[in-house]
Length: 61
Image (cartoon, rainbow, N blue to C red; front, side, top):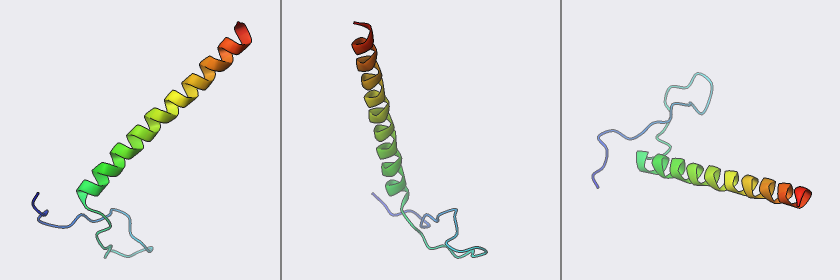
């Protein structure tokens, strides 16, 4: 994979008023973190759904 023409810069500055934020992460790292967040969210929903269904079956059967 080739290097990006310009390094990715975070839109958030480390200090108020600063406009020279160093590149925090590459786009590939950002995409990887988004996928990790996606799968953590999916697993969380599944855990909550299974716990809810288990409680419902426990209370109604």
